[in-house]
Each structure stands twice: as structure tokens, then as C-alpha cells.
Amino acid sequence: MLSPLYSRNVIRYLQDKGLCSLLNNSFETVRELKANQKNCNLVVNLEDNIQLLVKQEKNITSDGTPHELFNEWLFQQLLQQFPVLGNISAIAPLVLHFDEENSILVRSYLSEYLDLSNFYQQNNIFPVEIASAIGTTLAALHRATFQRKEYHDFMATAPAGQFRYSFYNPAQGIDSITPEIFGQVNSQSLQFYTLYQRYESLEAAIADLAYEWNPCCLTHNDLHLHNVLIHSRWNQLDNCLIRLIDWEACGWGDPAFDLGNIIASYLKLWLYSLVIDPTLQLEESLQLAITPLEDIQPSLVALLQAYLDAFPMILEYSSDFLIRVMKFTGLALIHQIQDSIHNCRNFDNSDIYKLELAKNILTMPEKSIVSILGTQESEIISSVTKMNEVTQPEKEKQLVRLYYEKTRLRGC
Image (cartoon, rainbow, N blue to C red; front, side):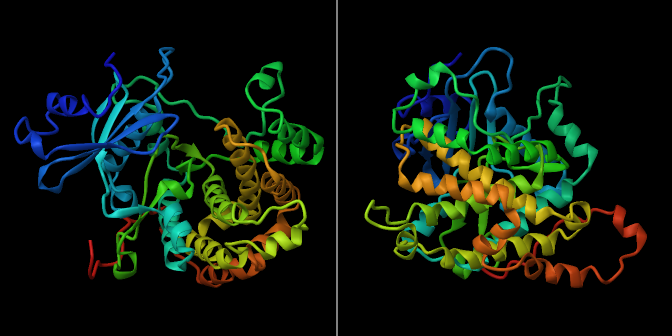
């Protein structure tokens, strides 16, 4: 087992693997990205403006469980094996090297791209073109792999033939409270678990969602705004607008789960911008939000409409698809609270409102479509319904088209 990588030994590792030259070392610089609980991430700048991202997984187990970075490498192999996916520029292959023994993955670093969450927070604008690109990209991935055994089998079997991948149902609530929890979180954060257990309807709704979970295509499974990159010249391009990254959790899953996660990530921008003060009523806090929900709603609607326009068949497969997307949105909000507590962040008044909002979404998803999205479900799917009025030839139902995006006119 190789010792952990850091700025002073990563260059030697890349040289040993033939990923950078032994010459001109003076042109090489290394910087570490912000702390990550799971991985150590180093950006290496080589000569000729070549940049690499080197990721090493922390706390690797030796019990035979596949490493998460192995899963990301396997997804990259899938893209190369099946051109239907490889032609989608937003998820095009980036991985250059994978070292399974030391759980190290090296990929090209997208220096011209920005973290979408940071972009939104710094500019406080929400162009619908960006959200539409996310929806179209997700739909292309889900549509191409929908109920297709070859993709399922590829992710389930490693190249050497051994079974390597285990499937799991992500529609899970909060684990049962054990005595160990008192040593893991502070007294303030214990309030979250107390409130969560108080809502029997919430636990019942999550249990129903877990029962209804229906894996049918390849899904990202960790889709939030930090895992979406936007090109620095996004408003000047006709293509390569976004990139979806960090496929360590990808697997055979439920497409509604991906959409629920990304919508919850948008809502997080709104919820964490609320002005929370004991002297203010909730309605006053909502009015004083730095990022009002009304500013985000057009992007949420554009994302869903773009997804359904590109993958209308999902409504035939699941007539309550948007309802299930909303339920997964509520579940994702609960997971956000739990993750922040695990990252030593206190459970505060904004989290109390987030938990209440999550409960309302999970237990009353039909009403939540209007309150969260600002429009009726029928308005979102109206364009898809009109398009499906034209009957397609029977043989077309068995075809999966190669995904070629529109011609790139300028930019990358």
C-alpha cells in the first residue's frame, strides 16, 4: 500500500506511472483543493498548460468492498465501451489512470470550468439555460440506459469477470438512535433526531418511498450543484455548457432520485439565505431571503421540462414521476441536514425549517409541486403530452438513438 499522496510526493508518483515527464520539473506546481472527508484532491500543473486532478480515497477498507474510486473508473470504462453515452459531452470520459491497489485516480482537470454552486452564490443569478442543460444531460443518460441489460451487467461485473458492484436502495431515512449518537453529536444537534422521530407520518412516507424505489437505468446518485461544473464562458457557447463530475456513487438506480437530489441542492441556496432571528416570524424570514425562492423557480421548471422533453417515455413508465421526484427532493433535504451534522455543523433554526419543509414535501407532494415549483404539474408536462399525441411507428420503440448534440458553432 502506497503512503498517502501529498504535494511533495505526487509528482514522483505521476513520473513513475508515466503520466508526466522526468524533465522540466521546474514547470510543475501542485495545490490541494479544499478539504474533503472522503478523498485527498491534488491539482498538478504541468508544462504546456496541462493540468491533472489526482484523487486518493481516504480510510480504505480491506474487507473486499469495492472502493468508490473504482466505481468512478468503471463508469469511465462504460462511456468508452458504449458510444451512446460517450457522445454526451457533459459526461465525456476524463480519467487517464486508475490505481486500484492504492485507490488513486488521475483525470484531466477542467480548468476552464467553475463549480456551479459557487457560481450561483457569487453571482446570485440563475440562467434557465444552465438548468435546461442539466435536465437534458440527465435525460440523455437515463434514456440511453433505460431498462437495458447490457449497461446493468457492465456495472455489475468488473473487466476480469468477478462480481464487484453491489446495488443499494438510497431511499433510506435516518438510522435508529443508539447510545453511541450521544458521543458523536452535540446536544443542539440531538434536537434534529428528536424532531425527526416525533413525525410518524414522515417516517411512514420515507418507508413508502423506499418500497416504491424502482431501479431501471444508470444514475449518478450524488447529484448536487457542487458536482456540476459550468464553463467560464457559458454565455458565449453553444455546447460544452456544463460537465457532471464525481461519479463515485453511480449505479443502477431510480431516475427520480437524481432529479430530487439536484432540486434539493437548488433549494439549499434559498434555505441557507434565509434571515433567521428569534424576533422574526417565518413569513418575515422568507421575505428577507437573500436568494428568494421565486428567483430559483424558473430554473427548477426549466430543468424538469428539459428532462421530460428529452425523455418523455418516463411518463408512460411512471405516470406519477413528478410526484416521486418531489418525494425524493424532501428526502434529499433530510440527508442534507444529517450530512451537515456529521460535518460538525450545528442544527439551527434554518435546519428546523428545512426539516418541516421536507416533511411537507414527503407527506403532501402534490401540494408541494405548486409551492416549490410555482406552477401546476399539468403545466410542466403539457409540452410533453402534446408531443406524444403523434404516434410513433412500433419499431421505433425498440431503438436507442446515438446521442449527438447540436453542432458546436463557437467556443470549446
